Structure formats: C-alpha cells, structure tokens
Amino acid sequence: VDYLSGAALFIRKTVIDQVGFFDEDFFLYFEDMDLSLRVARAGKQVWYQAAYSLLHFSGKSHSGRRLQKKYYDASLRYYVQKHWSPASRAFFTALQTLYRFFYPYGRS
Image 1 (cartoon, rainbow, N blue to C red):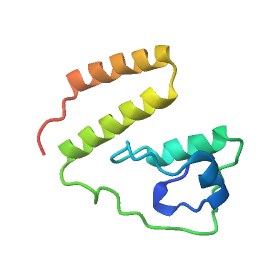
Image 2 (image 1 turned 90 degrees about the vertical axis):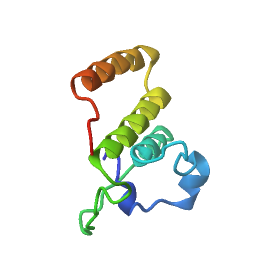
Image 3 (image 1 turned 30 degrees about the horizontal axis):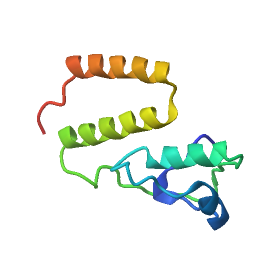
Image 4 (image 1 turned 30 degrees about the vertical axis):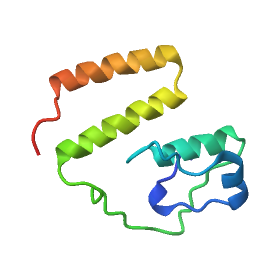
C-alpha cells in the first residue's frame, strides 16, 4: 500500500535505523504518510495486514474543527514542502490559498 495509519503501525527496527522514525516537525497529521514514503523510497515495502482490525477514534488530539483544520493545513504544507517538486509546491500553494479564501477556517 502507499501508506499506513500511524495509529496501528508495526515496523522493523532495522528499517527505523535506516530511514528514521516519525518526523517531529509534524505536529499532527501526515507523519505516518511521510514515514511510509521514506520507507518506500528506501526500497522497502509497506504492507497492510487485513487479518487484524483496529478502532481509531479520530479527532481526540484537539478540540474544535477550526483548530483541526489549521493543524491539518500546516502539516499538509510541510509534507508538500518536504516531498514535492518546486513547481508542484507552487501549484499546491496557489490552490490551498484559493481554497481557504472561499472556505475559511470559521468558528469552532
């Protein structure tokens, strides 16, 4: 798979030694995608085990949708900055700015 949720992640120590663990510059969101991408770029495979299940209560790390959107946007910008080409980053920034113009964070 492309990435796994950090809520239920098992990873070999040898892989962590090679690629590092979670990037602490992500406050919330996208740190699991970043780790999965670094693992794949190191030539390792990211696997999903369908025999197990987990219930993840999302939205418990913050209070309010406004704050959640700000954290999400900040982490997404960092992910894009870290992994995308300059042209793709510029296009993304323009789109995100336009999106937030029409859909501001609002209250709550």
